[in-house]
Length: 306
Image (cartoon, rainbow, N blue to C red):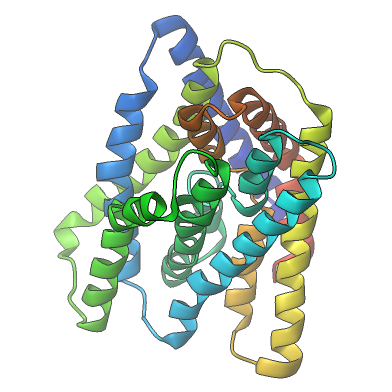
């Protein structure tokens, strides 16, 4: 089976999980908050800690979350000001969050596992810490601009379980502390539940909204940011590195490209719902981006990843 088919069917299984979450929320009345708490405080930290602890830590790998954070922040600010040209309300704030964010965890991780070896998956997970930090600092702050201050955003970061797991995983890697092999099967199962529950959570989040209105202008701008500007900036970084810096390997290029291909982040809907800033617009864009990603992601992987 060629690479397009492999990635395409993987994306389809992820969309099935979203559908299950939507039905569970609407029919069975499964509560989103309980699943989110389990993922946020237990499953995700275990997954990140396990992968990072097995990954060689050096300046190359540690620079990646900084690089990803910078790309997220640049696009966030860029689309915030572009959004001012079209909206005078808080829609531009949600657009800014959508532009800098990306579903690199729940959506991107299973594709990374499909394409990369274990060490590369660990580097991938270190890299997407940059998106997580963006989401909880500049992304959160600019979405809640009129409601929260910088101090609130910083407190959110300090409390991030994933950030604690990141530092603990780095310590284990640097000290070469090995996790006993008896936990291997457990870690594989936890990683699988992270993906399934994460994508199910997307469906649960959408099902909790009373109405999802299609704002085609908002969707188009979100698509421009995620499916065009993100890959364009990453390709620019790769081009500069190849000709000037020569810091990164082809494996790193592949990781950065995959991060740039993933659809809009599900957490955009969560943050917009919490802050009551047009969650229905965020939800419609997220759903549309996931459907579009069924073709877009396999195609981009086939063309650009080496």
